[in-house]
Amino acid sequence: MATSTASNSNATANKKKTKTSTSGKTRTVSKAKPDAKARTKRASAVAQKSAAKTKATAKARTSSDKGLSDLLEHGLKDIYYAEKKIYRALPKMIKAAEDDALVEALTSHREETAEQIETLENAFEAMGLRAKGEKCDAIDGILTEAESILDDFGGSFASDAAIIFSCQAVEHYEIARYTSLVGFADALGLDDVQELLQSILDQENAAHTKLEDLAEGSINEAASEYDEDDTDSHSDDSKSSAKAKK
Ligand SMILES: [Fe+2]
Ligand SMILES: [Fe+2]
Image (cartoon, rainbow, N blue to C red; front, side, top):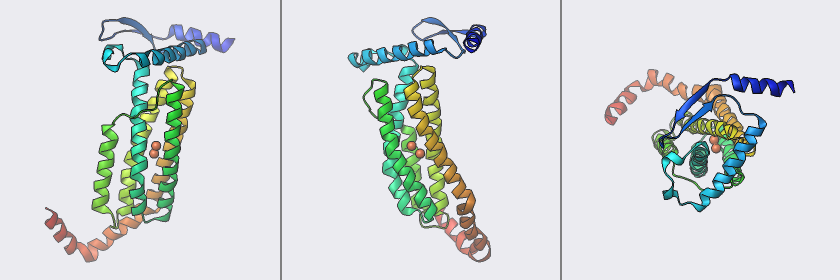
């Protein structure tokens, strides 16, 4: 068929690059999108590798043995850990939120997060792996900072704006990770895994847009009214409290 012939000739025409791994192995890599047959071959190679890995001990493998499927596995473990932590962190944010629409958005995203954890378990299963989290320093840092921002701003005029500020950091982190993972699954020909991860990525993007709409629609504006008043009647109080903090 014309499309397949064109894609094959594109693949040939595409620039090829030689790569040498740390183990000294040299191979030629192409930037061309693989055809359906190549994708199926890659997907089955990943399945075989996963099965073989269950027999080998982690220590027996060196970093030079690792490839994209290992990076996908690492990323899945990392985001699985992150989603569980986010699920546990959200109730504190929900409790502190004052705006009804924000409470609703966070509550519904927490429910989605519970579904995402299950979707990730399905992705592990589709790769022939046991679902397992791996400590992720990035999300630990983002959530620790979120807690301290809430301690600092909770109950203030900027409380809801501060909650969105922290939650947007979480959403951006998730979007960055899922975007990469979807790309890895695509490159490996793991269509089922790609579809599962894409469904989560769509939810994260929607959550990010929802929070952005709330912040820009009313919450930032409402919070900024205090600063307006502040310049008129609270300026002396504010200066003395800033001094006290120093
Ligand atoms: Fe999530
Ligand atoms: Fe999220």
